Image (cartoon, rainbow, N blue to C red; front, top):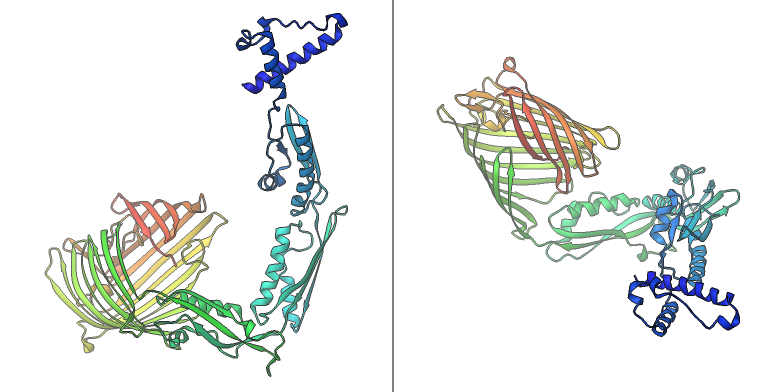
Length: 615
């Protein structure tokens, strides 16, 4: 309000001064300004007080304004992010502001390939405007890459072809820096751990809108792995780290991915909270003579920080399959001071209760890991009451992309279908399983493939109540359909070869239905009727197709169709179909789904929650 009053008084006093100068000299001393024309608060001031106040207001600075940017959309965000406009109040500040814009705008635009911009600061429509014309954008005219050192011709060609900022592309400083660092990283990744960027230049011809690039890399000598130097161990011995070291061996050629593989393998164990693995080039220096194979041997530094050996966890949750649950677990990663890992816990669900204890040994040099365990379980699902225990031993081994699991297990189970008598089944089983995965991100259902095959059985000649052989195959594949869409396919096929299902524990028969199999039907409700209960059958088949559209990077909508059944004979198969829609959220723990499914066989809608790793 004060600024508006000041401007009004300035205008009126200036007009009065001009009027006085136009009068005859003898009349110029008289200032006549009708009080009725003044703003209401000033009508009651004397002439002298009015003149004093006017002089005071004329001495105040004019109102400051923030300049407004006018620039093409492709550079507006850049200028807005990095330029500080501030307020400009008068002509001297405007001149200083214009000089600053002329100084700061061209270097900013040069980072995006605009080397001949025009910057104008002017007044327009009562505002101070900053008009920026970036001019034409320069493109890469040529790229000259020189690699110094003993690098074979095939590797040189591969490195040159991997260059990112190619001729004809727009020049951007960020792309230029990224291309140099990526090329250096490629050279550093195999053999040449001491490679460095020796020289680089970007020659700009603004008139021709051309940029000529030149990069010189010095490869240095090739390296090989030396001995491991381990630090940070207090509780465990160095032999434990050697058990997980399958890729970094003394004398082998240096590869960065092998260092990362060792670091990841150690980080994934329960023994260490943090791990760093790096080649110690400072211990040798580039001037050290190479060995007989022409390589410089450098030690490998492994620094670890051990985790606390004990961990207690408490949890609660809800599943549409088995209802509300509470659970507690205890883990000891240094059982008996031998780096044996104890995993134990109790889970109480509405439909199922479980207690278990497993002990795992560290892996051997062939990446085999052995374990023994015991488990107790009680459940009442679809009017089938089960109670039993199992004791077993397992051996797991990973070979490339295939994980193998062998097991020997004793199981005793008491089953009571509602409306039928109680029976007890016993089995000593040998089992084998293989899982093959190829998935860039196992938590992302949009891309990847997994195959799982299981084989197991028992014999009357070896403490089992029935002769049987159980086979099971599972398939899952994510098919990307553009940037925001994907198709997830799933299928299961299971057969238990036996004269009948009598005497076979339920773990070796099949039931289906629920959030991760055939949606729209209750958990394990598809099987063989026995009284009012549903029990397992010897045959299983399920299939599913799900289409997901990601509305945002984290949230999506899905439509799906499931079908499946479990029966005791192939002739009895009648696939139950379920279909519906759902919401998807990429949570930190994995893909979370909420589905509304319609079970066609029962004619009912069912809400399903699922949290599962698809691969």
